[in-house]
Image (cartoon, rainbow over all chains, first blue to last red):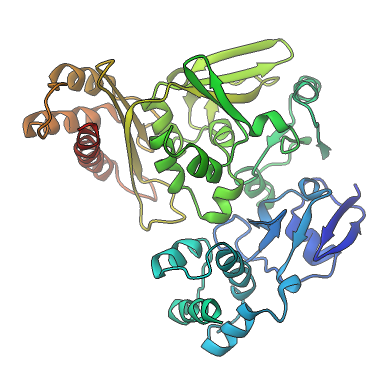
Length: 148
Length: 281
């Protein structure tokens, strides 16, 4: 089937989409946007977090057809923002695999709450796993981004 | 695989009647995992995210009727004061990303013994509204589950909504290895209604289906001094906990042992009772 949606502000089209494939697969393999990472494929790790109609979702759990006509923003669409800069400044990136999902989740948190408390940060990022376990630096990055 | 995408409820029911093997999908938090891991290859997906009425809630007589497609996030934000037990359980579901997409209708459809929404629905005596082109029926939630991941839902039926009579003082507690992203080792929901002298319970993840602890409900309703304001007598709380644990039929599995689940349930029952009773004052 053919899929039409808006990705990072641009109308995009993908052909020969299989009904059972995920939005994550479409983004990475059909639209050339590999920023969103494919890790657990079951919504546990948050590495594929994207905005869909302004709401953070796991792209691996969205059936491609469910994104028809929707507005998707990936980490590529948030490039050069203050969140990425804060991750660099804090040294919050180790292997980097969890970073794109965290950047989207932090972007959403700060859009809703410009000065979150530590418990609020932890709750907002509860769905994003860092298997390098660099959480302290990630929390630093959120505080830096919030202050910038 | 076909992708069916009705935009009206009537079209959705017609599609399900024409394609009884189609798997309904809303938030995708269960269905997509099965597809991603090649565990399931249904002939069709039936996307329900375009059917607006499923995402609405409102009153129906003295009950609250909540569309099957209302997300956990919206239950927390919009129904937290009306359905406190379900909202507490919803806060323990997955992560923000999962709560943004996952729905109570999907939880019911999956019919997992560990579904977080099930204990509070059992405790509050909810009804599940099932619909097909043949008509609509409302099933008490304690008659909805048949076995692990099995329910009374017929192949041509879809879950339209659930209905709850609000007003109970409710609590929910869940045991897991961390606060987020946890499938319950066991869980317990309690609903107390002073006016109706009613006790409702729901046990999760400790039997082939989510279940009520009927004997515990009857014991507590008869033993509580409903007009009293002080703490629940320890002997009553202890016996309630024992009866809740006795109602369960847990197994040993990767998340915990049967013995641990039984013990934990008796503790959760006593704790939620103390919290709820305090909330009645």
